Length: 72
Image 1: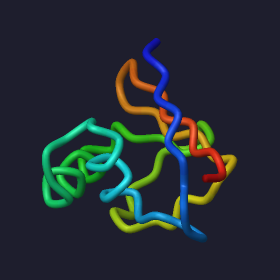
Image 2 (image 1 turned 120 degrees about the horizontal axis):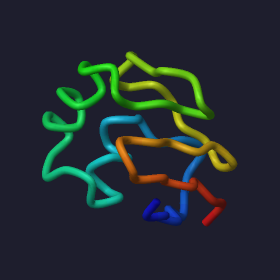
Image 3 (image 1 turned 180 degrees about the vertical axis):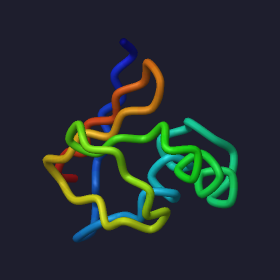
């Protein structure tokens, strides 16, 4: 499973923006579409809120990609 370490330089990042910033998709709009499919989990729980606040220490998964959000 590919692992991406994403350095968070603020309190939180919205889920759709995280997918874009981590290089999983090309835009925040595309990130929203991906979240809407129900294929994204945050800390092993399905997340359908496109702008869910993701904070340092959380793990986001999509298909075989794992994004670890670490303090920046």
